[in-house]
Length: 254
Ligand code: SF4
Image: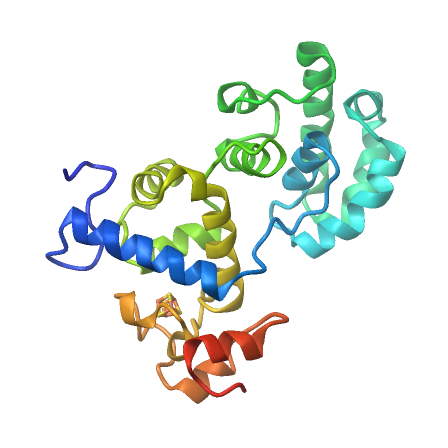
């Protein structure tokens, strides 16, 4: 059945059933392409993941991972962070950018977790999104990676890629999340999100995607958005597994 959420994207004439089959095939290929996909933020408990995810906005996971050890050392839980001086918090997270807003969010989050939930982060989407600094995307990261509750994380990479995949023409994150929810089995939502994000970081870049060195090329209606030439495309691959990514796509390593 075609619903608003599952309306086909850019592959004209594709039926909902064909789209589902193609989407699942692409998800299987992504699993083979990125066996190392995982949450790249370091954390030891749900509260730390919430803090790290808030800090990761407009920053990189590497930068956040350099910042959080000292932060968690000084404020090991929500109670400790709720008692922080905002100026001290700002100073500790300055290098992640937008530090004043982020410090405000962290203090608000810690205070709310202490006053409403006795210091423990809640485990439901409805409760999480009511907390300061936590939107649906952050809530899905926390649910999927700290609580084992499947969730699709619609970040900038996932939004861009599912559009290029021709799965949807929506740009609204909540609608994109529903589309993916309908196409991919629930148990795979969290890992699927990591794999798409890895593909976005390493292969299907925003400006120049490595189409000619992409394992999804035959199933992707946006093939050709970036260089189709295998040699040229392989040079665009990024990350620690460039040789493996090229081999998986059947092209020579750069
Ligand atoms: S073929 Fe190109 S646009 Fe499609 S997923 Fe691969 S890199 Fe992205």
